[in-house]
Amino acid sequence: MVEPSEPGGEGLPGGLVVEDWDALTFRVNRIAYRSQQIFRRERDRIWARTWLYLGHETEVAEPNDFRTRVLGGRPLIFCRDAEGEIRVFLNSCPHRGTVLCRETEGSTKLFQCFYHAWTFRNTGEIAAVPGRDAYEASEGFFDAMKLRAVPRMAVHEGFVFVAFDPDVPPLLDYLGDAADYMTMVNEQHADGMEVLPGTQLYSVRGNWKLAVENAMDGYHFSPTHNTFVGYLRETGFAVTDDDQYAYNLGNGHSLLVLTGHGGRISMLWEPRFGEDEKRRTAEHRAEMDRRLGPERARYVADESHILYVFPNLLLFDLEGLSIRQLEPAGPGRTDVRAWQLAPRGEDEDTRALRMKTMVSFVGPGGLATPDDIEAYEAVQRGIEATADDPRAGLDYSDMSRGMVDEVKGVQGRSIDEGAMRGFWRHWVRAIGVADGLAVTGTRPASFLEGRNVR
Ligand code: FES
Ligand SMILES: [Fe+2]
Image: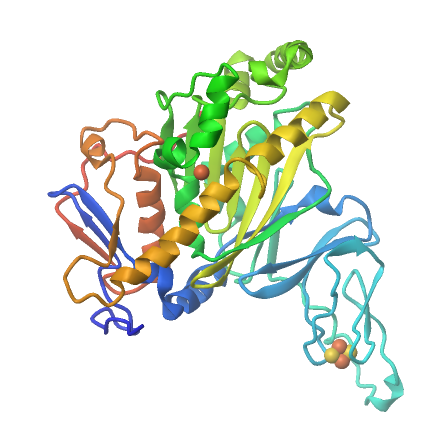
C-alpha cells in the first residue's frame, strides 16, 4: 500500500482524525490501522514514552516468583527478588543481548543465559561468569554488566506499571481519574484481590486500536452478541441500554458505566447465579455497606465498569473481573493477555461460579470474546477495500454517534461513540503528526470530560 504523502511532515498525512463541529461528524483515517509507519511511530511516541501496564503484584506473590512479558516489543522479566522486592528487568542478556529467561513463569533465584551461561541473581547482580579471569578485572566492569532494570516502575492498588522513559510524570498524575476506579476494584472485598493462576493468551489479526474501540463500544453489544443477549433474556434478565454512560477521563483513559446487563458475582445478584449465591451476595453486600458507607458501596458493587487505561490496559469489571493487556505486534496484529482478578479467600462455591461465568462470557472461548475478535478482524480485512481510494473521504471510519447530544451538554451514553472520540483525540496528540487532528467549528462549551465520584 502506498501511503499518502506528506503535508504533515514525517511521511504521514494530516487529518488522521477529523472532527467537525458544524457537521457533527468525527472520522478516523483508516491508515491509522494499516500503516507500518504509524505502527513504528506508536512504538516511539507512545509505547516508549508513557506508562504501560505490566502485571499485577499478586502474579509474583512469593519471593523468587517471576513472569515474563513483552511490552512495546521489549521482552521483560517481572519478578519478586529473594528479599521480596518487585523488580522489572529487560529480558536481554547484558553480554550479547540474548533473551535471558525463556520460561513464561516460575520461581528462581538465578537466571542463567543459555548462550554463554552468564548467571544473574534476581536482584540483577552477576552471580557467575564462566572463565571470568579472561576479562581484564577492571573495577566496575562486571558491575556495569548487571541486568538492566526498566527506567521506571510504580504500583497502584496492586497494578504494576513500567515506563521506558525515565521522565514520565508520576504514575498517579498520569492515571488521574482512572486511579479511583482501580481503587474501587480493590474495595470490592475486605481482603483485597488476587490474580488467579493461568493466562489467556491469544493473537488477533487486527490493529490494537480496534480492540480499544470495541471495549468502549456499547453500540455493538446487542447486534454482535445476540447469542449472549438471548441467553440473558432466557434466564430472566432484562437487557437494557438505559442509564449506561461513557466518560473520557483524560490522558486517553476512558470509562463505561454499565448497569443494564450481566449481574456482578458476590455484589449484584441475578437469577442465573442461583439461590445460594443470593444469600452470600446479601451478606457480602451488607459488609460492603458497613466498610465503605452506602454511597461508595453502591458505586463499587452495583455499577459495572469497563475501564481503559491508555494505552494497553483494559479492566472488564463486569460479572467478574478480567484484566486484559494489549501488545501490538504489528499494524495488523495484536497479542492479548488476560487474567482473572478475584477476591482473596473467596467462598469456594462463589469462586466456582465466578470461573464458570467468566469463561462463558469474556474468556477466549466465551459467548462474547470470539464475537468481538471476529469483529475486529473483519474490520481489519474490510478496510483494505478503501486503501488508496482516490475519492475524498472514503478511506475513513465514522465515530460521530452521540455528538448531537454532546453539543447539548448531555452525558454521552455507552451506546454512543464519545469514549472512542476521546481515545482518538489523545492518540493523535500522542503520535505528534503535524495537523494530525483537523478540527472544524468549535468544540461546544458544554463538552464533558471526567467522572470523579470520590
Ligand atoms: S549472551 Fe548471554 S551469556 Fe552471552
Ligand atoms: Fe463485545
